[in-house]
Image (cartoon, rainbow, N blue to C red; front, top):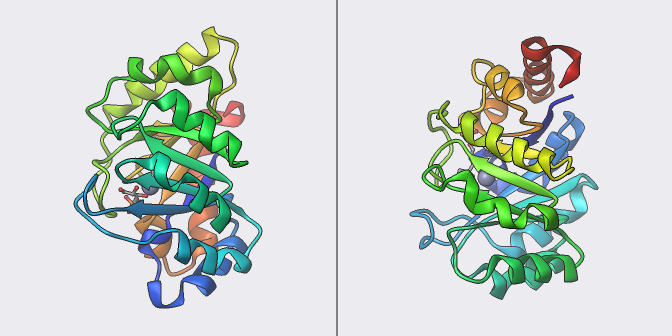
Length: 224
Ligand code: DX5
Ligand code: ZN
């Protein structure tokens, strides 16, 4: 069954706690939190204090997507704030193996994100030590962009390599996921989809999440 991670980037920031609870009650499998520093990406969002403030609103897994330079500096802060998983970009500073080690040491599950221009092969050396790989299906920075279908080859490449190493490694995608695009993602082997506008712009979030899951299942049958 496809898992859905609503991105709080598209929520009403003035009511972020309630919005987090609403997503949890609507069937969100993860709460996706987009941290941007205005430097690694051309946009600024929020940091660890905001995540700590919304943490009491739900027990659902907090999936923190760091789009920041020098992620190693902030891992402890995000772990303390209540992150369950921490995803950092392979294109950011620091030795990825060390960043992964620091994330585990802080008690969180590590994941690596790849921008659209970064080839799948670059994440291969780290697959064994990761809990997830995030294949960006838009340039990171903003919600509401168009899905890049060419990224499905990257999803397949990561999945194939992981399987060849005997790893059942979940692949997540982020950007432009909606009822038209989720089927293709499911067929490529994606198991977790981030959805911002697709869930928050819908009149009924619970229905939107259900429909996304149904569309994924319809596209590839019970196997995925
Ligand atoms: C983009 C963010 C995404 C974004 C997705 O940099 O990482 O999580 O919020 O938004 P949609 O689903 O609207 O493309
Ligand atoms: Zn994201």
